[in-house]
Image (cartoon, rainbow, N blue to C red; front, side, top):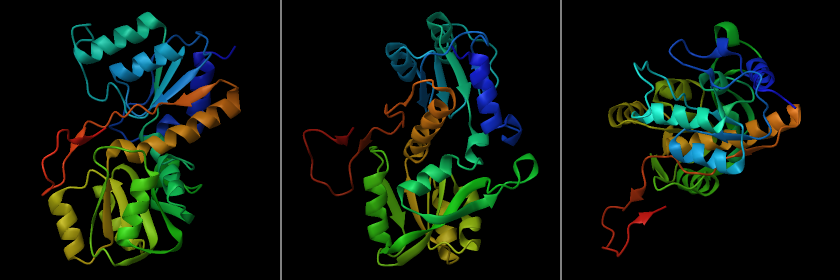
Length: 281
């Protein structure tokens, strides 16, 4: 039987904690190192719903991308939101492990899975890793080539089709007829890397959480077209690959959660006629 400690050792080798940003909080959050792991569930967010999914599936371990305790707390009382989650994990005997920015820069990592959905080839880092994570093709985001050029509209339609479904969908900024061959991607919030996408020769850049002013100024300066998807949807593809890798390395059955934890649940396009129910998931 593989233990929590042995799984932690596997992850620390695959996604060394030293690769994480200084502000990040990764590693084992809840769990006894000697406890057995018979099944694992990979999630983007450790929230009450995904914890219950793990319990129902008999998972002894949750591997989350986003840290549950990113910022300091003064209490984990069961009367608080995060405290209630911690108590449920402990009482159910479910360990929690986090791989966040150390998984973002890994190769393969979060953005490799996103690039794979679009069929990008000859990928390279959008911003190569520095310091402890330098080398080995590691870094944040990826840039690669489409098998054939597509218009921005066609690329947006492709992204909406292959990414996990959310109410947010995928929106784009730029000339719909602009032809795109080289694409940059970054799982999660990526407007920090707008300049990198332009410097890397991308025709379009797909990421999440783009803001009005940075996006507007980027386009005015002649930067790549932009595609903005739901944060959860750009990181969910990594779960499948990471779960399969854990099973291959340890034999532990692992699955990826399809529970949509994106906070945006309703979308009605401007000018749409009234309906009896909104367009939502």
